[in-house]
Image (cartoon, rainbow, N blue to C red; front, side, top):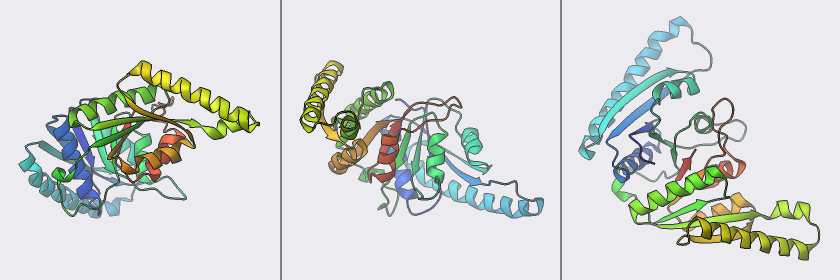
Amino acid sequence: MNPEKIYVAIDFKSSFTAVVSYAIWLAKTFNCKNICLFHIMEYTLTPPAYLMPYINQEKKKIKKKLNTLAEELKKYEINTENKVVFGRLIESIKEVIKDKKACLVMGFKTHITRPSTSERILKGLTIPVLVVKVIDFKEINPEAINIKKVLCPIDFSPYSLRALEAAKEVSDKLHAELKVINVIPEQKVKGIIEEPSEVEKYLLYLKEEAVEKIKKIDETLQYEVISGIPSEEIIKKSKDTDLIVIGSKGRSYTQEIIIGSVAESVIKNSTKPILIIP
C-alpha cells in the first residue's frame, strides 16, 4: 500500500478536523505528497432549473471553505487540491476518485433504518479506505496521532491476507506492535455438533489448525486464536489498540465492494480508526 494520492471526504461537521488530521498523518506515514479535499452535494432527484442559482451559490461557498482549508494545510508541505461535485453519490465519488493508487480518508456514521452516506461510499469504492471514528479533535493536529498498537483480524481468506500484508507494512513504518487475531465462529460449530464435549474437541482442533496456518504465514507474528462471535471478539480485543486493519469481502459483478458481515459489524461498532483493504 503506497498511495500516490489521498482523497479526503469533507463535510465540515464536528469530526472533519479528525478526518483531516488522519489524512495528513497517513500522507506523512507513506510519504505521499498529494491530497485532494472534496465535498459532494448529493441529490437523488434532478433539481428543477429554478433551484440551480441557489445550488451554484452554495457550491461557491463550499469551494471557498475548501480553499481556506487548503491554505491551512500548506504548512505540512503537501500538494493540496480541492473539488466540489454536485450529483448522485456513487457517480460523484467515481468522478472525483479516478486514481487506482489512492486511498480515501473519511468519517463514519450509521443509521438504524437505512444505509448511511458513509456505508454507501464504502460499497462504491475499490481502493483502501481509512475510516476515522475519533471526534475529539478541536483543531487539525496530526501530531496528536500516535499509533503504537495495530490489530489485524484474519480468517485466512485472500482478502484478509491482503489486509495482513498492509497491516505489516503500516506497523513497520510506524514501529508499532502488530497483533493478529483469528476468531473461530463458535455458533457455527454448535450448529453442526450438538454434544458439548465434542464441540470443545472440534473447537480445539480448529484453534490448533489456525495456529499452524499463522505460523506458516510468518513465525514472527504475535497472534491470538480464540472462539466466539467474531465481530464481538474483535471489538473486545481492539479496546487497547490504536488502529484496526481489516479486509473487505471482495467485489460483486458490479465492481462494488461487498463488505463482509464481520467487517461491517466491526466498522459500525468499533470506536477505533479502521483501515479497510479491498
